[in-house]
Length: 294
Image 1 (cartoon, rainbow, N blue to C red):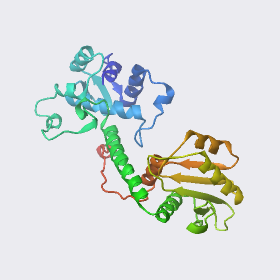
Image 2 (image 1 turned 90 degrees about the horizontal axis):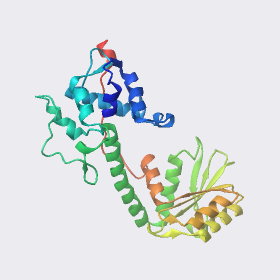
Image 3 (image 1 turned 60 degrees about the vertical axis):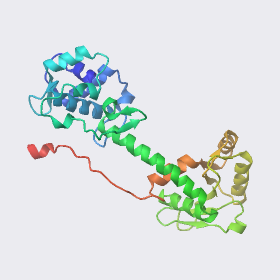
Image 4 (image 1 turned 180 degrees about the horizontal axis):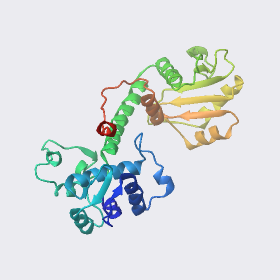
């Protein structure tokens, strides 16, 4: 928030987007940092500056003489001088205006962003706090997904892997996924036809191993051999376990395109493409409709 106050330090009235760039200059953001995605309509740094302006306006550190125009106040100048290294939301709360219940901390509020860091002390804006919270939920769900997959029989896991790849779009508009017979799979657990005629195929190996175990180079060599036996140029090896460095190096060295997906990434993909999970709850984030007030 202090970089925003410094950006307005000359006491001139400035448009919102002008404040974005001046604050970014104060922070010394490189061009690539300014391109980092935030919300659908704003870059990450713009989103943070926007929330800073909202907080500062709420306590009277900045004022808005007209729509989309901001100007620093005497309080804003005081805060910039008193907190040159930065001010937290908790510190800013001390300057809340009388009767502003939005700033009153409820006794039951014990939200934690990371370990012992509370929402009041964090530098994350509300959108980022939501992302952190969702990320923690996804991490917990991902761990449970791997446990559940490991507890199922091999045929269930193989089908789950094919379902995931189809959900990711690898079956094409008219393609299909076929699971091979367990007793005679020849080192291939499934085949995905990328087109209706099966001219382009992806061969799949799925291994339901303990999450703390590792798949080594010989196992990947056997899979590459199975690909060669089917005259295949691309394959995907998916496991609930991990890969050794030797296994990864070998997969990178062969002519065939071999993609290795281990437990953590498997869980993230299943969550992203909605395989084995369901949406529990959704939240709508709203903002002012400026056109309504034209």
